[in-house]
Image (cartoon, rainbow, N blue to C red; front, top):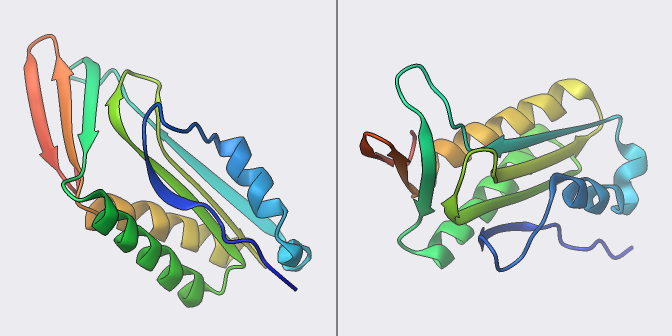
Length: 150
């Protein structure tokens, strides 16, 4: 049985558009989907309003796209093994965004909801805190720079 390699990549906004529905469809094409009882998805978007600031634009960059994408693949592989889930697909965009734009997409399919939900949570947290991203939030009052983990 040949299993297609799942999408796990960082994409510069505007070069390729992958939606959460594309990732869900891709995960469901895995022949082992019949072993799954749960699929969880996450779509992180640009937040425009917070208590003390209104973000009008956000720039997200990484100093070394190839290295960051390699690290992303390593994170996904380790999470699949640790939680015993069948499939994980992830897209993280970089570039210039406005409120409501998608930044980060993740889909996890696994045998049961418990380990599948835990795997998705770990995907979200590890990517946020371990990958080398620089976020610049532009507000009407200035720019706030946040390094990985923010």
